[in-house]
Length: 240
View 1 (cartoon, helix red, strand yellow):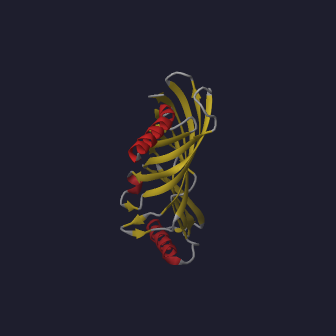
View 2 (cartoon, rainbow, N blue to C red):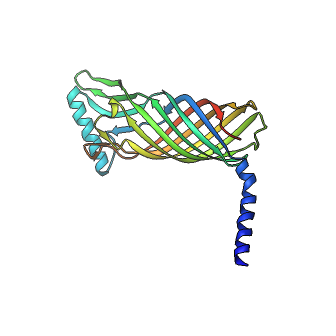
View 3 (cartoon, rainbow, N blue to C red):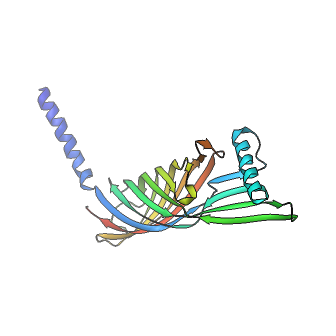
């Protein structure tokens, strides 16, 4: 009796799952776009107060200033606008809900800016210099499609998840703390042609905290980061 009840339960679960499994669809999207940082990845300010980090920042400014004979008040470093390319793998579990993994590589140089005063000249000082840099971004997100179903020509979706980011290039040579965990938000639009291909455009916001190190020592306080990624790509629908 129990055996029959168990078999009947398994059969009911399989029958109930069949329609949902039939809706599962895989998509691959090669993508290209742009990366831009809205905040400095590193900053040292002579007016910083309290804490070991503030003392380190002031020491960096003093040593750098002595080297170039300038009294430095501030030094910053920020990623520049850069080209990005990568790919997404999306699994739509139904007309509305999906899971997505993505990886992208951004060629984003870093601009360092120094500001202060030149005592010998009695003038203010400001100078910037660019160094090569790059980032990679890997994310796992849940997606929610605002317009359900594959028949609609324009489909909007929202997404949220976690990401891992890493920095490289000459700008981060001998620098530690270059890998961070982030939260990511996504808003996108898919233009469905009804065939095996579609066009997809996304805007993503990566939110996290960065804290760089040099020779194992923290060289600044934590810096909140707000990085934006704008991409477009051709969606290849692998199954329906």
